[in-house]
Image (cartoon, rainbow, N blue to C red):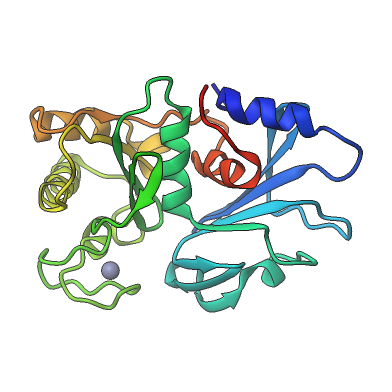
Length: 257
Ligand SMILES: [Zn+2]
């Protein structure tokens, strides 16, 4: 499934002349646009600004409000009007943190939507977000502290989990010892996160999906049944499930199917 049925229907219903709805996801290593037309989605490299840009959504690391991004140190964006930086003529209609958008997307892409879903995405950084009852809920995962002395460039706290297992702090390819360390630290943080019972954990992000998909089974085994662990439900061509979360905020209403 590349689009949940309610979003495919909403897109088909609004098909009209004019620029299509699109979503743009900014990550540490690449930018991807998802262009929605005819009830389907096409993925393209880079942002898609145009003089007549239609409704669009923006996802990026850090604090993302009304097209402004703060604290996305892995992008070199301390405080940037990201829409302008990407060449857009106006602010996005929807702005979301990339982990929040991906978590919402992972939840919406599942035929059986769990009551609660924790998203952990290892890319350039470590993203974490919790969806409960279909809404983004605060959770302390990616910048949870208590993991040694390493200092995170984002929150600047010593002992931050991101400073241990965020992709920019890891070797390009993980050996068996690296993988054990990543899984151990992540499992400890998940145990301390105070998750609702029955939460489904989704382990995703570029490093997991493209390079080390075996981390999903390793985390499942390490958590020993405390929480079910699944891989990403996003199609392989998508950078993450964030396009679905953004599209839901752009056109979604009524998630009955
Ligand atoms: Zn941090």
